Length: 330
Image (cartoon, rainbow, N blue to C red; front, top):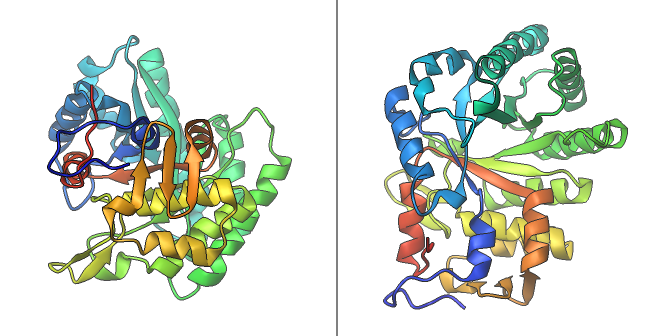
């Protein structure tokens, strides 16, 4: 049960499990758009804080990896820094393979330079608008194999346009097909779901988010989210003129969909929830409505399906937790 917001903050076990490694730090990106020294310092502060357990990798474009050389003093083999690297950015299918090759070479040099002091567990790839999802995925898989980078999980983001309703299931199916033939020792390719941005049109509808979660669940494909998830629960942003998705909504829908094989209408109901007390965390598990998931299953759902979300700010989600009466104990 959620504690009353006026009570002292405490951490139900389910909240710790739900939030573990949930937020990838993207301080270099808008709207924060920090200079690299400031982003590095902010990430180091979070890694040294009492909420370090919720912090995932540092998100950075491959083109900026070399800029980290002047900050290498922060890297150590005792506490390696993790990075999620954006590769193959911008452009069409014509030079997609070449852009991927160039960026994967940058990743390889970075890992070679710093050895066990850094890790790159993830890549993030926005797919070209032209070409089919299957064609783009085949290019990605070929580039990863050529670069001997198949042990890194890659999250693929479809181009969001009028073809979203067709592109999302097509990409999920292509990822499922890839899953069937890949080496079981390699992590599966995964889906990246954009939940917002700096323009109102970048915020997908509840139906679009539900479509992605449902398609990924049916295909058995993991997903991560990015952008816009600064608060736990869905709310109206009058300044931008949009309704923002909450991370309780998106990842609550994700773990419960995985556990209970929810249909799309059930996912939509969770995504539409605006009452923070409707999301129940206690020492036995997490629940919304009549659907519940225990701690062991919650860990499995987070590991196998609903991975993380990128945020340019970690303080705001922490402050949002406090506003709904939930805190993360040391």
